[in-house]
Length: 186
Image 1 (cartoon, rainbow, N blue to C red):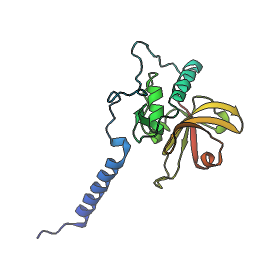
Image 2 (image 1 turned 60 degrees about the horizontal axis):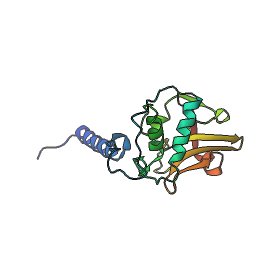
Image 3 (image 1 turned 60 degrees about the vertical axis):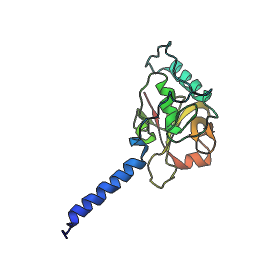
């Protein structure tokens, strides 16, 4: 029987681990067909309206309003429509409906735009978290600021795995405890 060299065995194991990682990572999964199985909550961007890619206060207000219209939609890993969506799917969906092409995964979304401090937050800014689910220490949750009420209350919308799409206060003990960064996307 032919002996396998330690280098060859290491390469095979590395390749196997890489394949397992890629299979489990949403980054490498196929995009769902948004037009499959229509339901009363499923939406697609109206084809009669042409969206501009101008990111100004009017566009931000429209995006916030659209995001809020999804309140109560259940959490679904990899989802990007009214049948269910995850946190990065919410951003992907509402910005996509306004003509902005953004990455689908939260850690990739966190690399878009200019990083800003919490003191600079305003509606339309993105907030990112490391919730330590899975223990990776990388950004795994995203949301969008919807309303700045005061220095202790900044609402953001996101998709909660237990309660679906909802708004929470960024300054709650839980969210500040896992807050990673904020960005102004465009």
